[in-house]
Length: 140
Image 1 (cartoon, helix red, strand yellow):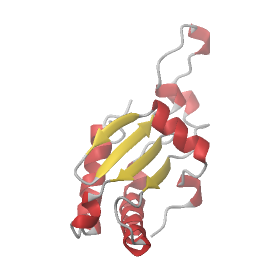
Image 2 (cartoon, helix red, strand yellow):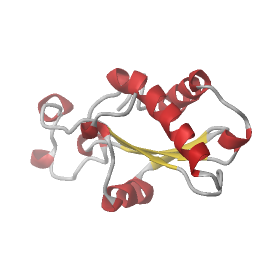
Image 3 (cartoon, helix red, strand yellow):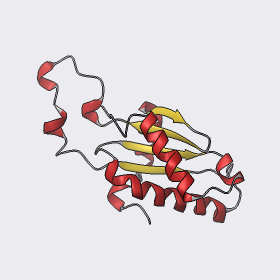
Image 4 (tube, helix red, strand yellow):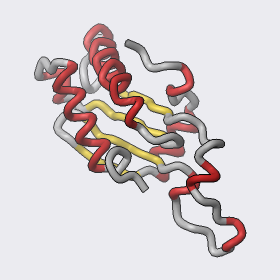
């Protein structure tokens, strides 16, 4: 199942912002780059400018997800696209658990193509990465 269009990270500018400002978490097959929603970042020195998550969450965009997979993973587009489809299917299952406003980029490591991984293993590893980055279970 593909990710809905509202949940896709598309523009180069968005990818660059996540890579520049986002936090990093690693696993055997993936690297997660996660950029917190604006209200969860460092508080401003101006007390009037601070907003609370309760008032801001209604205006937040849905969580956007990008998948980056280079030719280092595999020279064959068929293999790269299969991995992307498996990841998208696993992330689709996780979407209801994700809080709004996050921008996430998953970078696929070459180890993902070397071992034939099932989408169930991808799901488990992606969930673990999201928990490490505090996107799931106790997000700020």
